[in-house]
Image (cartoon, rainbow, N blue to C red; front, side, top):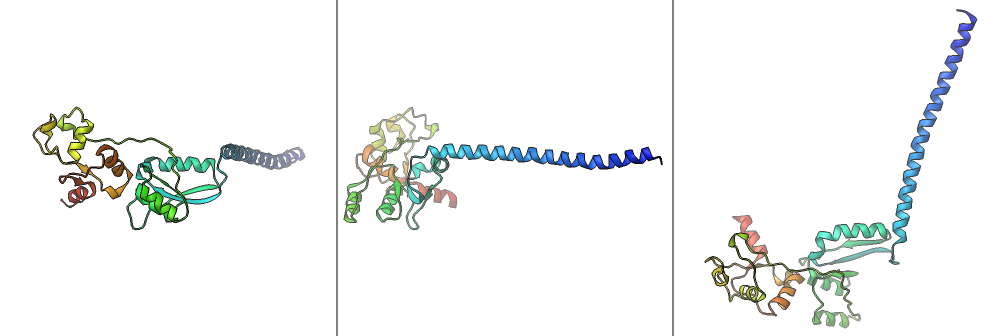
Length: 229
């Protein structure tokens, strides 16, 4: 082999590793810059969200109460967590009572919660209990919801008036024929009054504090019968 060929081979043998090294360094440089940019963007985004936080409190705060809020609780809490990362909310249920407005208020009075969600106004008895413990309860409206009466669509009932709903739920109207429907008995369904604020609100505002009729079927008992059948 000539001296020129040996020199060329030595040159190539030395330059190829150098090129590979520089290529590798360039590749990892791009990855590092990409990660740096991504981390910087995330950090900037988090800082912008945190700058919008108007809550000065820090720590974990227990809350509970109304099941009306349940469908959107997860989405709202997660957004609030992003905006105020040091303000952590934790939903807590009673170990002995069903979740609901009344249960949440009782837990609040018992100092088990920082605040409670409710789909009804405070009752006089609840305010008295709180005052007897040395503090007062404050109501802060945050949303408006509605109560919907569902009717089997096969009945072809165009609608119900408030008076008709009162008659159905108090047992004065017991057949659909009485309000323009087919000759079929009416079986009104509801949750128990202790289940939550929605039922209490319905009794107070729609039924005007009248009692449910004797033909009333409770929702959880109806589900139990369907499960067993």
